[in-house]
Image (cartoon, rainbow, N blue to C red; front, side):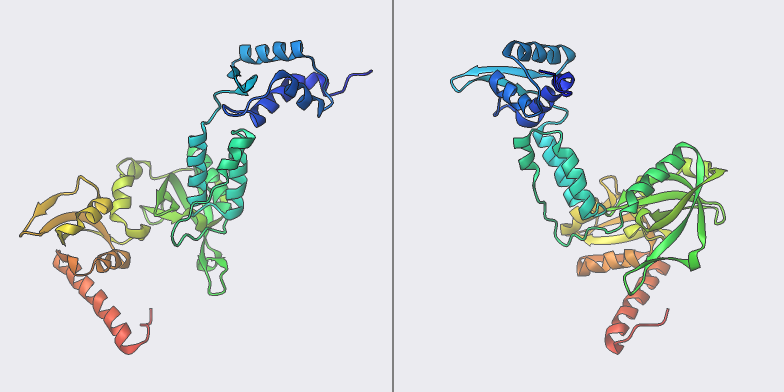
Length: 336
């Protein structure tokens, strides 16, 4: 009887069976392994099974031979990832806002391949995050890869920067004008990827939401702005930039009720200069990008927080509050 064309792949199929169908709680004996191989039209005997498993173990695979009251058999011991590690990765994928639903399913299916069939069922989890809206833009994965390539090759990029319209379409800003930027880093902030890059025309470092970048092209020009980036502190930049909205940088004084110390440390870090004032209050001095987002954050803290300086920023904040009050009194938006 002629041998099956799969016979030469016997060792690989044996490894596949052990990987997919066995774990510490589920093992297969030699007869069961012979029956599994037969499904692929591969013939085997007990002795050849023993020899093949020995070869796989010699090659470095952790195949465990178990003998107990329930019987004897083999299972795949250590794997590339332990089950708790895979569960953590699955949870991260499901909870990530920037990963689309379709891509989430694809990634989880790939992660399942690192577990046995029985363990893989435990990866069908669902992590619920309040208010979570998954992005629908799958180009972000390719944008990130493209930006990394540009950084590694020390080249500038050009792209269109997109914005949403009322009919829920992403369209290029500025009539499709292309932005030319020297990419220096990627930053993760407020559940979004941002490109930190040097704009030669403005002679400054700027940031751009990666999922809003379209039609990215790699340019032949070498990057510029290396000296500016060398003295650039990304962590400090993201701490002082609220929602990654830029604004004039100022050192401001803020006073808070003691109960907000956790909010302050979460926002500005443990190294923030904190001074005690009267009982129940404290003051900090921090650098921030003064913007509507900063004022909005401060307003959200209500009567437990107060901006005390510098005077021009305090006046700007008062005007911000007056405009909000006016909106509710008159019921109409101001013209931009």
